[in-house]
Length: 479
Image 1 (tube, rainbow, N blue to C red):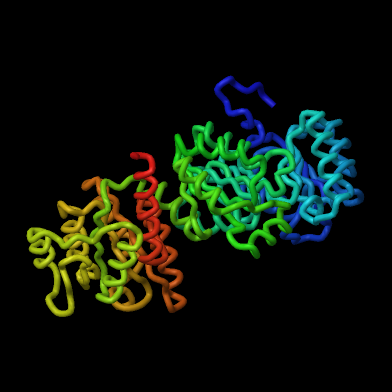
Image 2 (image 1 turned 135 degrees about the vertical axis):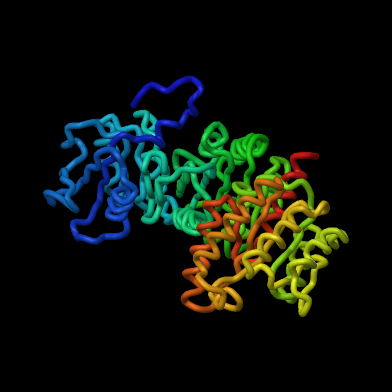
């Protein structure tokens, strides 16, 4: 490891290993989970350093040489992933000490979370021995790290393009699901950390790190329990004072608290106390993983709202009426459009079955000239702070109006240009398709919008919630 500059966050070395060893890889080809899953993920994302495999008998697995023990590797090893059974971890740790390993990631489960006192003692002994030797532990019972810049991946499908969103997660599954749902919508990550039981490095450590990390601009988290409550509270307050923070807290019910305790040995704690902490810290507490993704999308793409006024435009009067309700419920407003805006819309809007007041119900969005003219009238509206367009692909007018892919490229480019020219955010709610071709087209349109810098949401209600939470965060920090 290179010496760290004084301005470098304390845990920076954890996220940039030069070499990795994986203990516990199955000799069976095609293993997609455990040690074999990490091999696949690291190879897929293109980890630049050597990957060493530890296996007692196999000479090679997936083209990578195997070593009976970590100490049989001649070269330096920075980072070790353990997928061996819990009873073998103490010996693996001794080998890590002998090799001057800096980080041990315990994917291995079967410690405190089992509720067994002897397993808990073993976990404590491992941590004490590692600290004595200067080794930091991530886990046990976790997926570890996704760091695009370093080509580290915890699961398949994680891309090497970095971005501003950092995540702290007690659950590997929820960390992976966040990435899986967020990536197609354009969210890009700096670091995603699944820390499981948090036997050594805890949520507070990673909040502190991401607060100091210049490559992380937005922090999201999934927490099951509270470890070292006062320190975690200080870490969240410090993070919330400098960066947008959104937290999904599990254990909101008695059943959830029991599940959290059996999953990562976490005591969920009082939700009321946690709510108070978030309000003091200027952080948002969200209600679902979907909302966590929506908030990340909103913070990355929308960034800021000048006010609560939303102009809604799309085809379908009923959808527009529901949009007005959804927006109002999220603390936003749908003001009537001024006469000059209505006049501009009237010039390009067919009369029958339409409304140009707000919400706007119009089929002009499916006409090339009508699309830009209608959207321009919306962004030019003096009483509009944000424009919400709702649409669908693979059904209705979109299924009858020529090449959908050419049209979606033109629409996204037009939205991006109008957003830039006006300085007002444009967001798009893409309604759920019902036909196979609609799923493909919807996914393509969402990704095109993301490349153009346009926030997208799977429904009007979720767009409203995302915008409302951004406005709530702004008000907390302006108070």
